[in-house]
Length: 169
Image 1: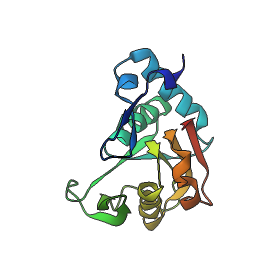
Image 2: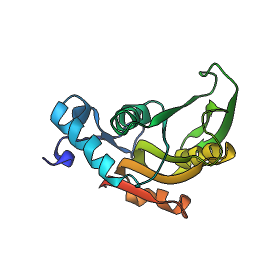
Image 3: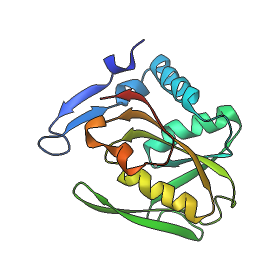
Image 4: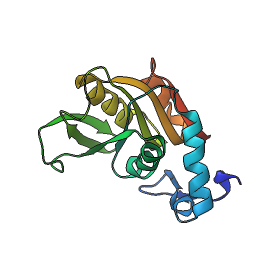
């Protein structure tokens, strides 16, 4: 089964000139979803303590991986969505900026974390995630993505980190 055959390309979304890679067909088919998660699992480093994932698609892939491997999961959310004391990071988007947060006590200093998300594009979101993890004393053991948009050179922003992706466009 080739995951690329079910991922739709939607032109001009969310704005003209963008080719959006739509993973919802993967999510609605159990066999493809299983394949995506199992393939991502095969890319994980051997030793780590926690999986960290941004809402919402980082949750979709990170939680089943954490569950299957008996690891904890750290949710990273948009500002104002978490109830306890948080750390936050504001970063640039292609068309604006965003702020993400996680609980300050989500990572114990020295814990190894793997960041899991659906897409690596420019690397801005993921760079913010690594900053949050490290601010809390975490060690980023790896970054795993379902899709990587190579032309946007997100890996350049993440130099020094171990980056893996299942599919490249």
